[in-house]
Length: 383
Image (tube, rainbow, N blue to C red; front, side):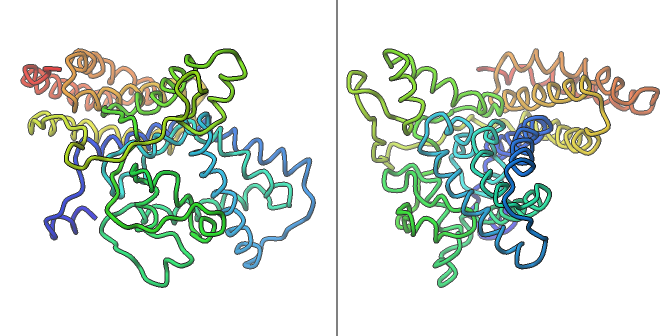
Protein backbone atom coordinates (compact mmCIF):
# COMPACT_ATOMS: atom_id res chain seq x y z
CA UNK A 1 0.00 0.00 0.00
CA UNK A 2 2.79 2.41 0.91
CA UNK A 3 4.70 1.62 -2.29
CA UNK A 4 1.57 2.30 -4.33
CA UNK A 5 1.02 5.60 -2.52
CA UNK A 6 4.62 6.65 -3.16
CA UNK A 7 4.10 5.82 -6.84
CA UNK A 8 0.90 7.90 -6.91
CA UNK A 9 2.54 10.65 -4.78
CA UNK A 10 -0.40 10.53 -2.38
CA UNK A 11 1.03 9.15 0.86
CA UNK A 12 -1.45 8.55 3.71
CA UNK A 13 1.17 7.33 6.19
CA UNK A 14 2.97 9.22 8.96
CA UNK A 15 5.74 7.28 10.67
CA UNK A 16 4.75 8.10 14.25
CA UNK A 17 1.07 7.34 13.75
CA UNK A 18 1.69 4.15 11.76
CA UNK A 19 4.13 2.72 14.30
CA UNK A 20 1.75 3.60 17.13
CA UNK A 21 -0.99 1.70 15.30
CA UNK A 22 1.22 -1.38 15.05
CA UNK A 23 2.36 -0.93 18.67
CA UNK A 24 -1.26 -1.04 19.82
CA UNK A 25 -1.50 -4.32 17.92
CA UNK A 26 1.62 -5.55 19.73
CA UNK A 27 0.06 -4.63 23.09
CA UNK A 28 -3.12 -6.49 22.15
CA UNK A 29 -1.20 -9.57 21.00
CA UNK A 30 1.13 -9.94 24.00
CA UNK A 31 -1.58 -9.31 26.61
CA UNK A 32 -3.77 -11.66 24.58
CA UNK A 33 -1.63 -14.56 25.84
CA UNK A 34 -3.77 -14.19 28.97
CA UNK A 35 -6.70 -11.95 28.07
CA UNK A 36 -7.91 -14.07 25.14
CA UNK A 37 -8.15 -17.06 27.45
CA UNK A 38 -11.25 -15.35 28.85
CA UNK A 39 -13.11 -15.50 25.52
CA UNK A 40 -11.99 -19.08 24.89
CA UNK A 41 -13.01 -20.07 28.41
CA UNK A 42 -16.56 -18.70 28.33
CA UNK A 43 -17.16 -20.11 24.84
CA UNK A 44 -15.89 -23.57 25.85
CA UNK A 45 -17.89 -23.60 29.10
CA UNK A 46 -21.04 -22.60 27.21
CA UNK A 47 -20.42 -25.33 24.63
CA UNK A 48 -19.73 -28.02 27.26
CA UNK A 49 -22.81 -27.33 29.39
CA UNK A 50 -25.38 -25.64 27.12
CA UNK A 51 -24.84 -27.27 23.72
CA UNK A 52 -28.12 -28.05 21.92
CA UNK A 53 -26.95 -29.85 18.75
CA UNK A 54 -23.99 -31.89 17.52
CA UNK A 55 -22.73 -30.04 14.46
CA UNK A 56 -20.25 -31.83 12.22
CA UNK A 57 -17.55 -29.91 10.40
CA UNK A 58 -18.32 -29.62 6.70
CA UNK A 59 -18.33 -26.98 3.97
CA UNK A 60 -22.00 -26.28 4.69
CA UNK A 61 -21.44 -25.86 8.43
CA UNK A 62 -18.38 -23.68 7.66
CA UNK A 63 -20.52 -21.33 5.56
CA UNK A 64 -23.30 -21.26 8.16
CA UNK A 65 -20.85 -20.57 10.98
CA UNK A 66 -19.09 -17.90 8.93
CA UNK A 67 -22.38 -16.04 8.39
CA UNK A 68 -23.46 -16.56 12.01
CA UNK A 69 -20.10 -15.38 13.37
CA UNK A 70 -20.28 -12.23 11.28
CA UNK A 71 -23.83 -11.62 12.51
CA UNK A 72 -22.68 -11.89 16.14
CA UNK A 73 -19.69 -9.70 15.31
CA UNK A 74 -22.04 -7.00 14.00
CA UNK A 75 -23.85 -6.82 17.33
CA UNK A 76 -20.64 -7.02 19.38
CA UNK A 77 -19.18 -4.21 17.27
CA UNK A 78 -22.34 -2.12 17.36
CA UNK A 79 -22.64 -2.38 21.14
CA UNK A 80 -18.95 -1.50 21.43
CA UNK A 81 -19.96 1.89 20.03
CA UNK A 82 -23.27 2.31 21.80
CA UNK A 83 -22.35 1.25 25.35
CA UNK A 84 -19.85 3.54 27.05
CA UNK A 85 -18.30 0.71 29.09
CA UNK A 86 -17.76 -1.43 25.98
CA UNK A 87 -16.38 1.56 24.06
CA UNK A 88 -13.36 1.51 26.41
CA UNK A 89 -12.14 -1.66 24.73
CA UNK A 90 -12.84 -0.59 21.15
CA UNK A 91 -11.95 3.13 21.15
CA UNK A 92 -8.28 2.31 20.60
CA UNK A 93 -9.04 1.10 17.08
CA UNK A 94 -10.52 4.49 16.17
CA UNK A 95 -7.87 6.79 17.66
CA UNK A 96 -5.72 7.08 14.53
CA UNK A 97 -6.33 10.22 12.53
CA UNK A 98 -5.03 8.51 9.38
CA UNK A 99 -6.64 5.70 7.43
CA UNK A 100 -4.39 2.98 6.06
CA UNK A 101 -3.66 -0.71 6.54
CA UNK A 102 -1.71 -0.07 9.75
CA UNK A 103 -4.99 1.08 11.34
CA UNK A 104 -6.34 -2.46 10.96
CA UNK A 105 -3.65 -3.61 13.39
CA UNK A 106 -4.55 -0.96 15.98
CA UNK A 107 -6.59 -3.01 18.45
CA UNK A 108 -7.70 -2.65 22.07
CA UNK A 109 -6.12 -5.06 24.52
CA UNK A 110 -9.26 -5.13 26.69
CA UNK A 111 -11.81 -5.48 23.90
CA UNK A 112 -12.14 -9.25 24.21
CA UNK A 113 -13.68 -8.89 27.69
CA UNK A 114 -16.58 -6.88 26.25
CA UNK A 115 -17.18 -8.72 22.97
CA UNK A 116 -16.68 -12.39 23.93
CA UNK A 117 -20.19 -12.85 25.44
CA UNK A 118 -21.83 -11.97 22.11
CA UNK A 119 -20.58 -15.22 20.56
CA UNK A 120 -21.97 -17.52 23.27
CA UNK A 121 -25.13 -18.29 21.17
CA UNK A 122 -22.88 -20.05 18.64
CA UNK A 123 -21.57 -22.32 21.39
CA UNK A 124 -25.10 -23.05 22.58
CA UNK A 125 -26.19 -23.96 19.05
CA UNK A 126 -23.36 -26.49 19.00
CA UNK A 127 -20.42 -25.16 16.99
CA UNK A 128 -17.26 -26.63 18.62
CA UNK A 129 -14.77 -24.11 20.09
CA UNK A 130 -11.88 -25.01 17.76
CA UNK A 131 -14.23 -24.75 14.76
CA UNK A 132 -15.42 -21.32 15.93
CA UNK A 133 -11.85 -20.08 16.43
CA UNK A 134 -10.91 -21.29 12.95
CA UNK A 135 -13.86 -19.62 11.23
CA UNK A 136 -13.69 -16.39 13.25
CA UNK A 137 -10.09 -15.98 12.09
CA UNK A 138 -11.40 -15.66 8.52
CA UNK A 139 -13.97 -13.05 9.61
CA UNK A 140 -11.14 -11.07 11.21
CA UNK A 141 -8.79 -11.51 8.26
CA UNK A 142 -11.39 -10.20 5.81
CA UNK A 143 -11.48 -6.87 7.66
CA UNK A 144 -7.79 -6.12 7.14
CA UNK A 145 -7.97 -5.00 3.50
CA UNK A 146 -10.88 -2.61 4.01
CA UNK A 147 -8.66 -0.18 5.93
CA UNK A 148 -7.39 1.76 2.93
CA UNK A 149 -8.10 4.95 0.99
CA UNK A 150 -6.64 3.51 -2.21
CA UNK A 151 -9.71 1.49 -3.19
CA UNK A 152 -12.71 3.52 -4.28
CA UNK A 153 -16.31 2.31 -4.56
CA UNK A 154 -16.69 -1.25 -5.85
CA UNK A 155 -20.04 -1.32 -7.63
CA UNK A 156 -22.32 -4.34 -7.10
CA UNK A 157 -19.92 -5.87 -4.55
CA UNK A 158 -20.88 -3.13 -2.08
CA UNK A 159 -24.49 -4.25 -2.09
CA UNK A 160 -23.71 -7.28 0.08
CA UNK A 161 -20.14 -6.98 1.33
CA UNK A 162 -18.27 -4.54 3.54
CA UNK A 163 -15.72 -2.54 1.53
CA UNK A 164 -13.13 0.20 2.10
CA UNK A 165 -15.72 2.83 1.18
CA UNK A 166 -18.21 1.49 3.73
CA UNK A 167 -15.58 1.17 6.43
CA UNK A 168 -14.14 4.63 5.86
CA UNK A 169 -17.56 5.88 6.91
CA UNK A 170 -17.31 3.83 10.10
CA UNK A 171 -14.03 5.53 11.06
CA UNK A 172 -15.38 9.03 10.39
CA UNK A 173 -16.14 11.48 13.21
CA UNK A 174 -18.38 13.64 11.06
CA UNK A 175 -21.80 13.62 12.80
CA UNK A 176 -23.62 11.73 10.03
CA UNK A 177 -20.91 9.05 9.94
CA UNK A 178 -20.66 8.31 13.66
CA UNK A 179 -21.93 4.86 14.73
CA UNK A 180 -22.59 3.70 11.17
CA UNK A 181 -21.50 0.63 9.17
CA UNK A 182 -20.60 -1.79 11.98
CA UNK A 183 -20.42 -4.81 9.67
CA UNK A 184 -17.44 -7.11 9.56
CA UNK A 185 -17.94 -8.95 6.26
CA UNK A 186 -21.58 -8.49 5.22
CA UNK A 187 -22.85 -4.89 5.02
CA UNK A 188 -26.38 -6.29 4.80
CA UNK A 189 -26.59 -6.31 8.63
CA UNK A 190 -26.30 -2.51 8.69
CA UNK A 191 -28.89 -2.20 5.96
CA UNK A 192 -31.25 -4.55 7.82
CA UNK A 193 -30.90 -2.88 11.22
CA UNK A 194 -30.76 0.80 10.25
CA UNK A 195 -27.08 1.63 10.76
CA UNK A 196 -26.00 1.96 7.13
CA UNK A 197 -24.54 5.17 5.70
CA UNK A 198 -23.19 5.65 2.19
CA UNK A 199 -19.80 7.36 1.85
CA UNK A 200 -20.35 10.85 0.51
CA UNK A 201 -17.75 13.51 1.36
CA UNK A 202 -14.38 12.28 2.61
CA UNK A 203 -14.57 11.36 6.31
CA UNK A 204 -12.50 13.00 9.04
CA UNK A 205 -10.85 10.17 10.97
CA UNK A 206 -10.20 9.71 14.68
CA UNK A 207 -12.22 10.05 17.88
CA UNK A 208 -14.19 13.07 19.06
CA UNK A 209 -11.78 13.59 21.99
CA UNK A 210 -8.37 13.19 20.32
CA UNK A 211 -5.71 11.10 22.03
CA UNK A 212 -2.90 13.46 20.97
CA UNK A 213 -0.22 10.93 21.85
CA UNK A 214 2.01 8.35 20.19
CA UNK A 215 2.21 6.26 23.36
CA UNK A 216 0.46 2.90 22.70
CA UNK A 217 0.10 2.12 26.42
CA UNK A 218 -1.59 5.47 27.02
CA UNK A 219 -3.83 4.69 24.05
CA UNK A 220 -5.11 1.57 25.83
CA UNK A 221 -5.72 3.36 29.13
CA UNK A 222 -7.04 6.75 28.02
CA UNK A 223 -10.64 5.59 27.20
CA UNK A 224 -11.04 4.28 30.76
CA UNK A 225 -9.70 7.56 32.14
CA UNK A 226 -12.29 9.50 30.13
CA UNK A 227 -15.08 7.25 31.37
CA UNK A 228 -14.05 7.71 35.01
CA UNK A 229 -14.04 11.48 34.48
CA UNK A 230 -17.55 11.15 33.05
CA UNK A 231 -18.68 9.08 36.06
CA UNK A 232 -17.74 11.95 38.37
CA UNK A 233 -20.58 13.95 36.83
CA UNK A 234 -23.19 11.40 37.92
CA UNK A 235 -24.90 11.63 41.32
CA UNK A 236 -25.48 8.25 42.91
CA UNK A 237 -24.95 4.69 41.77
CA UNK A 238 -27.93 4.56 39.39
CA UNK A 239 -26.82 7.56 37.31
CA UNK A 240 -23.23 6.33 37.26
CA UNK A 241 -24.47 3.00 35.89
CA UNK A 242 -26.54 4.85 33.30
CA UNK A 243 -23.44 6.77 32.18
CA UNK A 244 -21.60 3.46 31.79
CA UNK A 245 -24.37 1.67 29.91
CA UNK A 246 -25.62 4.49 27.68
CA UNK A 247 -23.73 5.66 24.58
CA UNK A 248 -20.58 7.75 25.02
CA UNK A 249 -21.55 11.38 25.57
CA UNK A 250 -24.69 10.56 27.56
CA UNK A 251 -25.12 12.49 30.82
CA UNK A 252 -28.11 13.14 33.11
CA UNK A 253 -29.96 16.42 32.50
CA UNK A 254 -28.44 18.02 35.60
CA UNK A 255 -24.97 17.32 34.16
CA UNK A 256 -25.73 18.93 30.82
CA UNK A 257 -27.61 16.14 29.08
CA UNK A 258 -26.50 14.29 25.97
CA UNK A 259 -23.43 15.81 24.32
CA UNK A 260 -23.83 15.28 20.59
CA UNK A 261 -20.78 15.39 18.31
CA UNK A 262 -20.13 18.74 16.64
CA UNK A 263 -19.72 19.30 12.94
CA UNK A 264 -16.09 19.29 11.82
CA UNK A 265 -14.74 22.64 10.67
CA UNK A 266 -12.28 21.42 8.04
CA UNK A 267 -10.51 24.80 7.97
CA UNK A 268 -9.63 24.54 11.68
CA UNK A 269 -9.12 20.79 11.93
CA UNK A 270 -5.56 19.52 12.27
CA UNK A 271 -4.01 16.16 13.07
CA UNK A 272 -1.80 15.57 16.07
CA UNK A 273 1.77 15.85 14.86
CA UNK A 274 5.19 16.15 16.42
CA UNK A 275 7.74 18.03 14.34
CA UNK A 276 9.85 15.29 12.83
CA UNK A 277 13.57 15.01 13.48
CA UNK A 278 15.14 12.66 10.94
CA UNK A 279 17.95 11.44 13.20
CA UNK A 280 15.58 10.74 16.08
CA UNK A 281 13.05 9.07 13.77
CA UNK A 282 15.83 6.87 12.40
CA UNK A 283 16.88 5.84 15.89
CA UNK A 284 13.28 5.15 16.88
CA UNK A 285 12.69 3.08 13.74
CA UNK A 286 15.74 0.89 14.45
CA UNK A 287 14.58 0.30 18.03
CA UNK A 288 11.10 -0.43 16.70
CA UNK A 289 12.40 -3.13 14.36
CA UNK A 290 14.05 -4.68 17.42
CA UNK A 291 10.69 -4.51 19.24
CA UNK A 292 8.98 -6.36 16.36
CA UNK A 293 11.65 -9.09 16.40
CA UNK A 294 11.46 -9.54 20.17
CA UNK A 295 7.65 -9.57 20.09
CA UNK A 296 7.58 -12.20 17.34
CA UNK A 297 10.01 -14.43 19.24
CA UNK A 298 8.05 -13.95 22.44
CA UNK A 299 4.72 -14.85 20.84
CA UNK A 300 6.27 -17.85 19.08
CA UNK A 301 7.87 -19.29 22.23
CA UNK A 302 5.43 -17.89 24.81
CA UNK A 303 3.66 -21.22 25.30
CA UNK A 304 6.93 -22.83 26.43
CA UNK A 305 7.66 -20.22 29.13
CA UNK A 306 6.65 -20.26 32.78
CA UNK A 307 4.08 -17.78 34.06
CA UNK A 308 6.68 -15.50 35.66
CA UNK A 309 8.68 -15.31 32.43
CA UNK A 310 5.55 -14.57 30.43
CA UNK A 311 4.71 -11.73 32.84
CA UNK A 312 8.26 -10.36 32.57
CA UNK A 313 8.07 -10.61 28.78
CA UNK A 314 4.72 -8.83 28.55
CA UNK A 315 5.87 -6.06 30.89
CA UNK A 316 9.16 -5.63 29.05
CA UNK A 317 7.50 -5.36 25.63
CA UNK A 318 4.89 -2.88 26.90
CA UNK A 319 7.64 -0.74 28.45
CA UNK A 320 9.64 -0.94 25.21
CA UNK A 321 6.82 0.24 22.92
CA UNK A 322 5.76 2.94 25.43
CA UNK A 323 9.29 4.37 25.47
CA UNK A 324 9.56 4.24 21.67
CA UNK A 325 6.27 6.15 21.38
CA UNK A 326 7.61 8.78 23.79
CA UNK A 327 10.86 8.97 21.80
CA UNK A 328 8.90 9.93 18.69
CA UNK A 329 7.17 12.61 20.75
CA UNK A 330 10.62 13.82 21.92
CA UNK A 331 9.57 13.54 25.57
CA UNK A 332 12.40 14.48 27.90
CA UNK A 333 11.64 11.61 30.29
CA UNK A 334 11.96 9.07 27.48
CA UNK A 335 15.66 9.91 27.13
CA UNK A 336 16.36 8.70 30.66
CA UNK A 337 13.92 5.79 30.40
CA UNK A 338 15.68 4.68 27.21
CA UNK A 339 19.07 4.71 28.96
CA UNK A 340 17.68 2.43 31.67
CA UNK A 341 16.04 0.15 29.07
CA UNK A 342 19.20 -0.24 27.02
CA UNK A 343 21.19 -1.11 30.13
CA UNK A 344 18.59 -3.62 31.31
CA UNK A 345 17.96 -5.28 27.93
CA UNK A 346 21.02 -7.60 27.88
CA UNK A 347 20.19 -8.81 31.41
CA UNK A 348 16.56 -9.54 30.54
CA UNK A 349 17.52 -11.35 27.33
CA UNK A 350 20.01 -13.47 29.25
CA UNK A 351 17.22 -14.49 31.64
CA UNK A 352 15.20 -15.76 28.69
CA UNK A 353 18.15 -17.28 26.78
CA UNK A 354 20.68 -18.38 29.44
CA UNK A 355 24.16 -19.69 28.71
CA UNK A 356 24.16 -18.11 25.24
CA UNK A 357 27.18 -15.81 25.35
CA UNK A 358 26.76 -14.89 21.69
CA UNK A 359 23.25 -13.55 22.37
CA UNK A 360 24.48 -11.71 25.47
CA UNK A 361 27.42 -10.22 23.59
CA UNK A 362 25.24 -9.14 20.69
CA UNK A 363 22.72 -7.50 23.04
CA UNK A 364 25.46 -5.68 24.92
CA UNK A 365 27.02 -4.46 21.68
CA UNK A 366 23.65 -3.23 20.39
CA UNK A 367 22.99 -1.43 23.68
CA UNK A 368 26.40 0.28 23.70
CA UNK A 369 26.03 1.53 20.12
CA UNK A 370 22.46 2.66 20.85
CA UNK A 371 23.55 4.52 23.98
CA UNK A 372 26.28 6.33 22.05
CA UNK A 373 23.81 7.36 19.35
CA UNK A 374 21.20 8.32 21.97
CA UNK A 375 23.57 10.75 23.69
CA UNK A 376 24.22 12.40 20.34
CA UNK A 377 20.44 13.04 20.19
CA UNK A 378 20.08 14.39 23.73
CA UNK A 379 19.36 17.95 22.58
CA UNK A 380 16.38 16.70 20.54
CA UNK A 381 14.32 15.86 23.65
CA UNK A 382 12.57 19.18 24.17
CA UNK A 383 9.05 18.29 25.33
